[in-house]
Image (cartoon, rainbow, N blue to C red):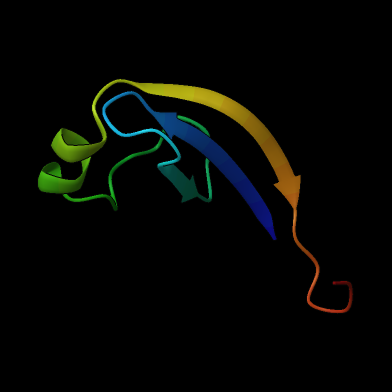
Length: 51
């Protein structure tokens, strides 16, 4: 499963994990406000067979 990670600017250590880059349609407006400006960190391929 593809996972895209963004770092929030308002609180240190806050990260948002979504499926598609720049597609925040499934994220609530409240959460986006709390996170602040989002900075792209990385893409990850998650695999349930690997730890």
